[in-house]
Structure formats: structure tokens, C-alpha cells
Length: 437
Image 1 (cartoon, one colour):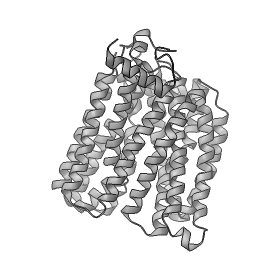
Image 2: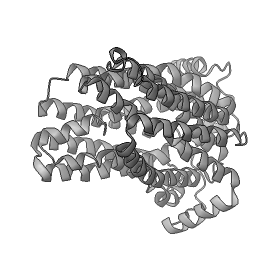
Image 3: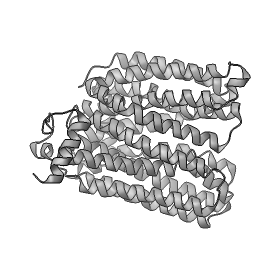
Image 4: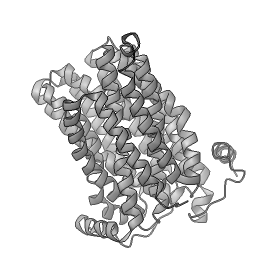
């Protein structure tokens, strides 16, 4: 064994706690031999992807871009829905296409390359875009970016299922989240330092670094040793939809999981409203949001490996516990507004609750990702992931619109109480899921 292979095996064994890096449950022997090297490549790919995500954030960087080029304010409201739902909705349409590929890593590479190109186009718009035309082009490029993100997302999970064994995937995603948290921390520090710097050249440089992050992601994906898999069962988009809907009728566990996942959206929906509540109460601008990004990075670095280890033991239990944590964090966030003005009008208490909610949200994400990958088999994993993500994308658009109306009517604090009740329902649902590990 080459020296670098020995080093990779030792790092892998340290990260996973395994004394034997060649122990595998549900992947071929050829994939098992390459598991330590593939594990490290997955980690580096996650770092590039998360850094790129933060430097092109639809919650911070792209609104800044829209303001810089003088785009109409109403366009800013479309940034987050396009970024999130656009990555999820089309996945069922590409599941059958991916099944026709014996090596799915090249679909992942294609998605990463398209995202890098989109980031470069956004950098060009930062330099030369202006007005309504510039804003419309930003939204158009964001559609391309989010669709490419969805392509990479489904392929990434499928490749992980083929190259990383059961009871190791949660650990991988946990360490990926920790490394990504470090990238988030760095991105937040950059945003705080550049708070007063609004030059188009600086913004273009940030988006250029995002393109570099996705290039690293694609390069690492291309180097993963993936054993060619079966291509039987590849179907067109409509056949995939029909098969997916039949799965919801026939597989009660899959249906129950998607109900739990829908209720667990409360953690993702609560985060921006908690940040907004902090802004409304403290009066801070981008520097306050930069602080929230920093604390979220620290929280992710601490929490993700712990959640990942637990997810390998019981991903259902992680989903249940994270739902309880979401309910408590929403209650605390709303409760901060009832504290004396000297406390409630500072950004720090909101940042503390935000950090706790980020920790909990990582549990939600790791729990449901690990559960979905472990619940499916190699033959139907791509379809399960695509269908679940498409359903979540539809719900995100619908529920996001309803939540927005409620926030306008009730206010952010009262909305957090509604999301707390939703999280309690998620806890009850997740508790009844069967174990899949």
C-alpha cells in the first residue's frame, strides 16, 4: 500500500473511530477497498460546495448584488424561493436519467461545473449589470444555478450510497457539516470585514471564489472511485413520476418519512425569521447578519460530527430529538422579545438562540438524509431521493408562501410560536418511524 494510502486510511479511521477501515456492510469489495480515499474526497468536495454556497448566499450576497446594480426591490423576494425550490422540484425528472448512467459521479461533476459557470456569470453581472435588466438576468442565472444544484444533490447522495458503507454515511455527513461550518465561519468573517465595502469589484471577487469552490467540488467528484452500477430501470421523467407516486402508496415507511420531513421544515423556516426578528429588535444591519453567519459556522463545526455519529446509530432518534430542539428554540426566540428592552434590543441574545437553532437544524438535516439513504436500496435510492426532494420543493413553495402571509399578519415572534407547534408534531411523527440502521 502506498504511503499516501496509509495516511488516508489512518485519517479515515480517526474520523470514523474504526480500527479496521475495510469493514463494509452494503457496498462491493472493490468499493470497500477505496472507501478511505473516497471518504476524504467526499469531505473536500463538501468544503468546496459549502464555501461556494455561502459566498453566493441568496440571503446575504445576492440581495447585496441586487441593491448594488439597482434592481427593483420586488425582485429580491424571489431569490430564496428560486434558490431553494429550484434545486428540489426538478429532481424527479432526472432520476430516471441518472439510473441510465453506470457511473453517477459524472452527473455530479456536470452539476458542479454548471454552478461554477453560473457563479462566474453572476460575477460579470456584478461588474456590468444594472437596473431591471440586470436584476432579471440575476434571477435567470439563479434558476440555472439552482437547477444545477439539484442535479448535483441527487447524484451526490447516489454516489455516497455506492462508495460509503452503512453506519459510515452519517459520520461522513457529520464531518462534512463540521468542515462546512468552518467555511461558513470564514465567509461570515469576510462579510463582517467587508461591511462598509460595497464596490462591485469586491462582490465580483467573492462570486469568483464561489466559482472556484464549485470547481474544487467537481474535481473531487471526478476523482472518486465509483464502481459501475446497474442501469436497468432507467425511465423517462413521466415514468419516474408514476413510479414515484406508486411508491408513496405502496411503501408506507417512505410516505411516513416524507410526512415527518415536511413537518421538520419548521427548523429551516424558523432560521430566517429569527434573524429578521433580531434585526427588527436590535436595529443592526449587515454587521448583525454577519455575526449570525459566524455563530452558525461555529455551531455547525461543533454539532455536525456529534449528530453524524448518533445518526449512524439511530437516524430516526436524531430526527425526533432535533424536532424537540426546534420547538424549544422557537419558544426561546419568541421569548427574547418579552425580556427588558436593555436585553431584547441587543443582537446577542438572538445570535445565541440562532446558534442553538443552527445546531438543531443540522440534526434535522443529518437525521433525515441518513434515514433516506439507509432506507433505500442501491437500485431505488436515486428515485427515493429525487421524489422526496421534489415533494419537499413543492411544499417549500406552498408552505413558504403561507408562512410569509402569517408573518405579515402575526409578526415574526408569533410566527415562531406557530413553528414551535409544528415542530412538536414533527417529533410525534418521527418517533413513530421504524429504525432502518
